[in-house]
Image (cartoon, rainbow, N blue to C red; front, side, top):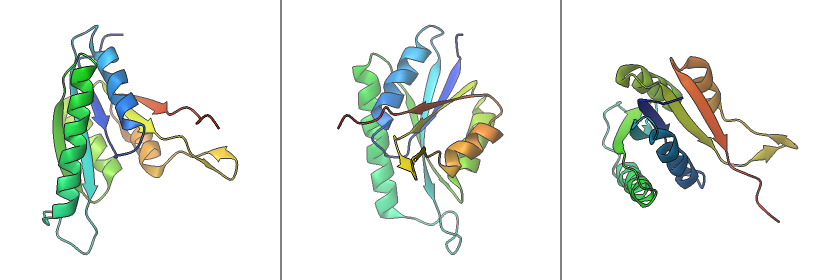
Length: 143
């Protein structure tokens, strides 16, 4: 399947570089646009447009690293830093507004109580996105 617009939410985890490389490979057949976003979750006791300098700086660096990974993989991506109350809602809204036909979301390898853990954000994006969602789970680390 050839995609036209791929949305890649990044959380600053170890899975992000793998996710970007996968997005580039999925984008190539249809020359799809890739939009990488990072959502800064703003606490309810702050205004939504609060200036959160450390989070903004960290988010900008995260997106710059993603752009370098994409370039090394032979692709390019647009980046956007978002502020929202909940990351999942912002991701779903962005997918809808930008006309994404794929959300490629990452899951670092984690287990809780012997079971693979799926975060609330991944679950809500999976259930709420208006397009296809591909969740990429990082492989189990070699011990």
